[in-house]
Amino acid sequence: MFKNVQTAPADPILGLTETFKADSNPDKINLSVGVYKDATGQTPVLESVKEAERRIVEQEDSKGYLPMTGEPIYCTRVQELIFGEDHEIISEKRAATAQCPGGTGALRVVGDYMHTLHPDAVLWLSDPTWANHNTIFAAAGVKCEKYQYRDPKTNGLDFDAMYESIKKIPQGDVILLHGCCHNPTGIDPTPEQWSKIGDLLAKQGVVPLVDFAYQGLADGIEDDRAGLLELTKKVKQMVVCSSFSKNFGLYRERTGALTVVAENQEQAARVMSQVKLRIRYNYSNPPSHGGQIVATVLSDKELRAKWVEEVAEIRDRINEMRHLFVKTLKEKGVEQDFSSIIEQRGMFSFSGLTKEQVDRLREEYSIYIVGSGRINVAGMTPDNMDRLCEAIKAVI
Image 1 (cartoon, rainbow, N blue to C red):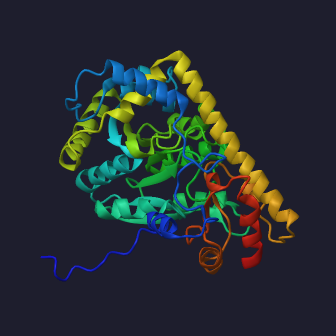
Image 2 (tube, rainbow, N blue to C red; image 1 turned 90 degrees about the vertical axis):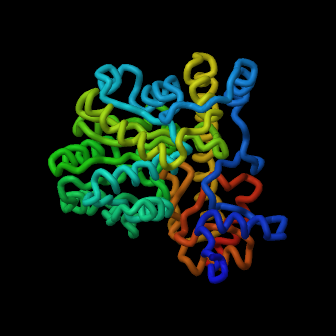
């Protein structure tokens, strides 16, 4: 069986991390994988998370299986976080949520659902999008197409082109939208643009799938709902995939959720019954620990306040690095305009660096960036900024 098996190509992002770890250069810099680093270059455990874990360990009395959709209290808190506690979707019970192993797990369940229940539906992805979107849905047997998004001339959103692309999407298809902190560009629509997108999707009969992986890292926990809430005013059906890897720092706990929004409670329950079948043959039920942490923090007033404060610190540090990066490049006499990076949000930005420049940064300076030029701003620190900008100046 295994005799003629060929070595698989390395993952374009995680494979870079493996190469980075093997690099012996003590001054190496990793700006590839999407993991937050503090000013010392470490991925910290949030204090709110540590306190929640202490309580969980003291109170936990079973390691029995969770239900297929996870802990009910977790699912309730997820809905409150993404929509707001008083939203009519919650009061009218139009949403149903399943706890999933990370945002990736949630997306794969959506892919299996689409492939089985809506085999003719095409999923439309932004150009560009997170590289793993393509592979997740291809593995699920879902056909994907692209809609326009980024303007390469301005390194900003080409909203007119995006709008015209969406106009061409047939009724019954699905469009994947990034709720905030678009990965890989860091470019988001304004609330007014979100409203226009919602109007168009309602008119076209296109269902939005919102990948909501970075809530809190753009402008704030509540502010980052703006685009999603504009959509809820326009469309009656959608799917939201949440992740708590970034805003809770729960990378290794694989904590995410899939939320179905339907026209009424009965419809939501029917769809979730089909989602549960997809969960059953994928992983049966979700892991518990990360979900317990999120539910514990969001259920306690003081812990939640501490968490909001810690997310703000993460967001502020990332934005400080954006400004310092642009400032340092200018000080070093780099003529290429990187100022658009200041306007972008979240952990990632499209740098505008070419594949050849990225290769030189890795080979000559041990600086690791994804081939597309996407950089993880959170990998920058005050200590490595000077060397990073000197290297970029050298390759451009």
